[in-house]
Length: 128
Image (cartoon, rainbow, N blue to C red; front, top):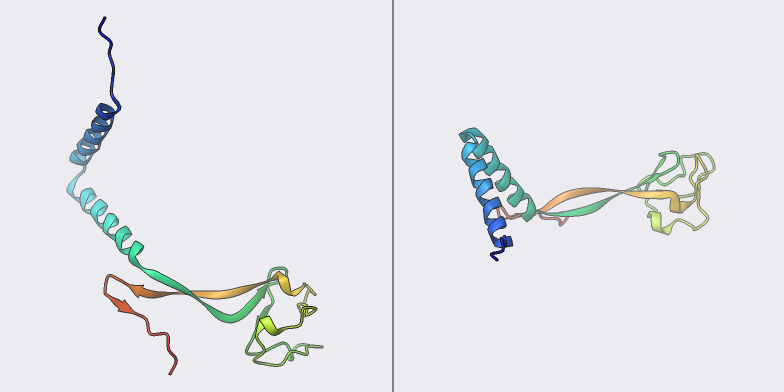
């Protein structure tokens, strides 16, 4: 009347032993590469990024770019003066090339490293 009961703990420890045996079969170069990859993943997780607007909005239909610095007055029929933020464009403003509405534009942004905890440095974002 003895029952063969395999406990989950035994199975977990067996799988851990399998991983250790697998590492034993790895050559030194592979072990070193695995350690480097783990360290790189740890460092990457410590980095903090920030998105900054470029002032450019791109039409999803035709890829025309509205640059806040230029406006659209250089286009035929353009009425928007340079240095006009995209948010301040009239709600009925349309893409000058394909006539898509304002909500068909996507903001182009850049992602920059703000804090690198590896070197304990922080990017200074103040403008001179």
